[in-house]
Length: 187
Image 1: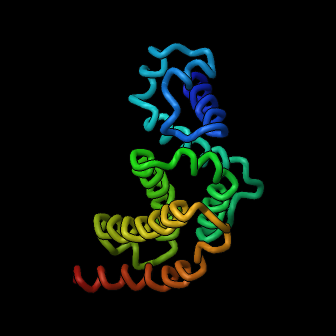
Image 2 (image 1 turned 90 degrees about the vertical axis):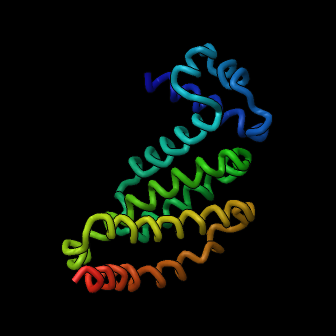
């Protein structure tokens, strides 16, 4: 089952090397990997569903292959931006209004995961209700996703022009402050 999905994703990535997503059809994708249309629709609703799955899988594989694994949340986020930069041609050709939503969903999921891990290092997090911690993480994940997508929309001109250091500086103290404010509000 995953082999079929992977074959479809590889076919899509090959097509994105040559043309934009708007010019790629399901027929093109299945022709590129010898899988029939029915199998495509068994696994995916449409091309954008495949785009989302392929992006998620690629990022997951990218992080799995890192040796040694990243040591901290900032390094993980830098590496995620690095993945985007290294794959910019494919990602830019796949970036259009409908896929933008899918890119955002994948990015928010990854940033949420990274920030939830970071949250565990704050002792006050244990005393903050789960729904409030989720809210704090969601707000910061939205910020990272927005920063990344704004950079994509500019064409990812330079990996070093994302201003991650500013965002890290902003986030480092404010995550703990946000937790403290929620603690005060619940007491």
